[in-house]
Length: 182
Image (spheres, rainbow, N blue to C red):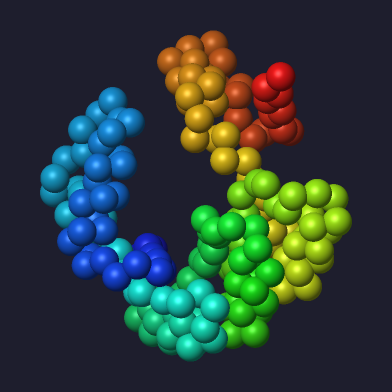
């Protein structure tokens, strides 16, 4: 299966600048260096498109790119829309994705939003209603940005470094994890 990583960004980067930015991020926290040939293979699959996330034309362009890729692959693209945006943009982006048809395939389209989702219960409910009007509930993933924080990374390192825990610390045996910072 072919995978293309499409990046839509509001800044005007060249693919070279963007790939160097990605490489820097990958190598900064990695204990294993990335082989240059594997990195070049990965970078060759990245497509970059500058977009205005509030303009319907941006979504139409993305839709065309994905249709072209699906035709080339002879397969339906798995679409994950990760919103690294302020919560005030969740609603218009979700609505634009729905209007463009990008959210319509329930099995192959997902949206990921990072907490905080609003600033109080009322704003959360408003945003959540907008997300659920554009996507089915099982397409919406609400995550906590703490997944990238040191405490969580230490838990992951502990899991994979300890042969006793590694086989049982996975999705088959753990329903959810709650970390509370008081």
